[in-house]
Length: 327
Image 1 (cartoon, rainbow, N blue to C red):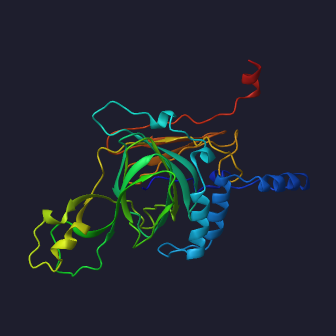
Image 2 (image 1 turned 45 degrees about the horizontal axis):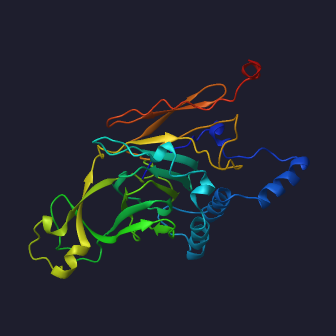
């Protein structure tokens, strides 16, 4: 859905790079690898699979299955979540509840993060240009509706200001369930999530959204096929329910996404070590942008939202100083 931006500077890279090993540490690291958590396993497989990945190219089926097999076995316990956490509390308001995004990792090849939706939370219909996306529902029940552009319909089926799309999925899902995968031109590249209960969705995007690289996150409204008259349509009446018209939105006004620290397993290259850099990022490219303020000890992350709300600044984690500990 478009929100993770990580530092491109050398300083930011320390979030992902392990310190050089000494001989004394090698044995410890080997023991650590034997106890690799599911989150770290997911990261390692993604790092391997997407090493030579190019946007718009679908990974081989064997590679996709590797990632799916790890995700299929993951639960909320593996990422330190449960439905009773504040992210998932029902709110009494006329507005849609805010959604929390927990950032785990991002590089130019792929990103890993978790969307936390309270009951009635909605991630609006949006696209994934040139991307392969894995979504794993960790817990909860949600409705998913997805579309692909209707390339199989005659070019005479047109309407002004909208584009025809074919329904791929229109169903309810309850965890545990298998990981869903969408592709650049198939699998429901445009989808919408609506939470019926508290829900957590673990997402892997390959590659991440990037406006400079042409991967802009676009949002849409969908309309039934019958909403727009089409003269001389060659689409049979019995098939029209499988199609809808999509109109692009500049920005969804009722969407609020906030960032929070990921507090699950603190593995080597996935989560920065305590005392180094703790950060949160966003994930809705048209909605949220980030400004990084460097200090001597920590990177502060500020949220800016051009639509309605400013969700920040987010207070960064700071390791207590020796002087503070003595007090």
